[in-house]
Image 1 (tube, rainbow, N blue to C red):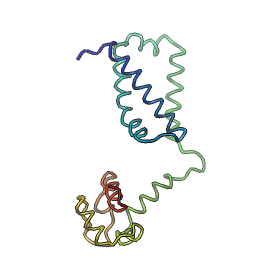
Image 2: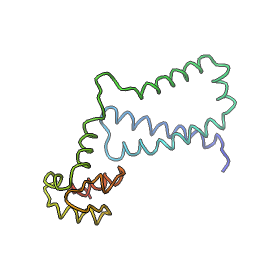
Image 3: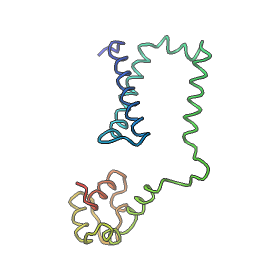
Image 4: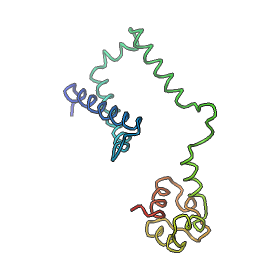
Amino acid sequence: MKISREWATPLTIGAFGLMSVTGLLMFFHLDSGLNKLAHQWLSWVMIGGVATHAIVNWPAFKRYFTSSRMGRAIIGVSAVVLALTFVSLPGQKGPPPQVLALRALTKAPIAKVAPLAGRPVEELIDELAKAGINLPSANASIDSAAPDRGLQAKAIAVIFGAK
């Protein structure tokens, strides 16, 4: 398929609409359903749309870096703001509380997690095994059997009954 303005620009416009609406909904804590998931995954559509739009408009795109002081200033400020997003705020120590809680759950022996779920240890070990997460004993942790976050999330869903 040939890259053309006929579809690259509408793709960019459509993706921008998706990103801006879902982003605003998340910002104001009004997101529901698949808003957050769509925002995260459809950002790839936005990247594709912007990339194809830049390709079909390459001569004009290059001018923003060479002959437009305002263009360079805006791009430069945007780069600085992006760099600053990687800096922690004063008083911000470590990951958010929900991440700390999940780490504690995944690192604790399953025998200590079972009472939190209100389920017998043996039942959890069996359910986890059916889900492909094999714990050799009640002293094993989710982290030891499922080192990646995807499997850990699956284990948490099994333990706390999310189907």
